[in-house]
Length: 146
Image (cartoon, rainbow, N blue to C red):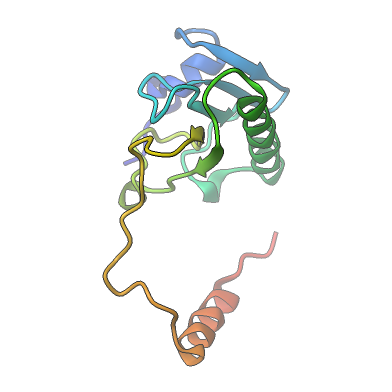
């Protein structure tokens, strides 16, 4: 599902039209607190320019997203908030768990017994080289040239 920019809550935050607890702003990205945090200190980093998916994201905006994310991680580690590690999470598409259709990077502190975890599939094992090579070949054939 793709939302129009006028419906996009992150566009509204970037434009100063919606309430947010801002942490940092750059020319290309804005970092603010997630209203439904995984752990205390959970930050969202969004590009100022609307992009519903990674495919629509400008290269420079993608670079800035991760630069600001790295700084958010450093701030979490240097803050008084509990932080023994940091996770980055970015969902691209409904099947990946994206529920706000403006690209956004989650940056959140981790610590022992914080209640967050990953559920790995039952067939999570080291794959045969032939299978890896077949997947690599499919990706090489589809690799976008910019």
